[in-house]
Image (tube, one colour):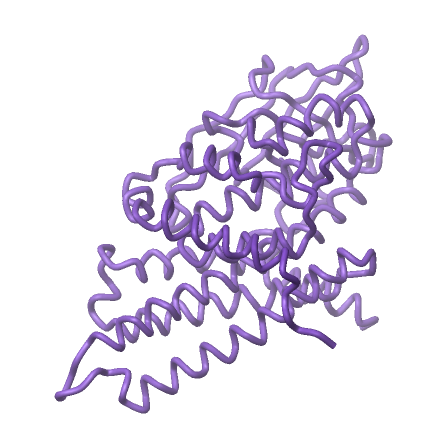
Amino acid sequence: MNFDLPDEHREIQALARDFALQEVAPIAEELDRERRFPVEIVRKLAGLGLMGIPFPEAVGGAGGDSLAYALVVEELARIDSSVAITLCAHTSLGTQPIYLFGNAQQKAEWLPRLCAGEILGAFGLTEPESGSDAGNTLTRARLDGGEWVIDGAKQFITNAGTPLSGVVTITALTGEGEVSNVIVANGTPGYEVGQPYRKLGWNASDTRPLSFADCRVPEGNLLGPRGEGFRQFLQVLDSGRIGVAAMGVGLAQGALDLALAYAQERRAFGRAISKFQLIQAKLADMSTEIEATRLLVYRAARLKDAGRDFTLTAAQAKLKSGRLAVRCAEEAVQIHGGYGYLDEFAVSRFYRDAKILTIGEGTDEIQQLVIARELGA
């Protein structure tokens, strides 16, 4: 069993690490403070081919795999989670449904532009009355004269309202108890993107409510067979958990990086606080848990790339990494002491960004249900 990354994966990891340090780190605090979407950062990521990592070159992607994708997400989250979730949501939720379930015409229309990062994609699942209970979709789409007429609302949707946003795939009832997915282009009459939420963290990412009122799209915008929406989005969420789990590992590693650097510089009682055993114990525990969780995330990615069942491992990775991110961010703030409570210090942003990782892409409780189900409990 070889735990070393292949050379091509090390190269893309190094590319992402250098980009995060050189392009993202200098402006991460400013983006967070101004709650400003990083348009130029996304364009630069696109220029490096990182907005379509796990998709084949034949459809405009970079020809990478899930492990390469996880590595890039991890390195971005190690510096800034807002940038990481922008790429993550675009890839897993915006592009993947069309790649997995789209017909030839839909793929030709959307995938080259999505994979190139020319436009951002989004996925509209959550509603005011359906979050974890995703099957309780109330948005409706009815056929009328060769068009789907959509009425309803979505909330907590990432990447739908940026200057680069181009398309959203939404779940809707197309019949009694029949959930389907429908593609809606930005700018379609009747499709309105709401004002961005004021959030605890991820302040430089785009998160908004969406509304649909007599919104008409061609009948051909149905994604896959009618009534297959529930099965489709479960498959999409399985894959998406690998990306979010990679974010958790990246954030935890970034918190450790900050805590270690501060502990080595901060002096108390005549020496660096990194020399005190209580601080060393915190750093040691963080490092050990991060490494164990990283291997779990990589295993989920490798299982997916091998075409094997990865549902259980992805849920375990997502559950473990989200909790770890929260714990490591908290310990990093504690090591910083009073400075950790100031927004001028990056560790404060990491602390605020961490909590959503136990909620988004399926709450911890949903992950536990998935894990228990996969165990046969």
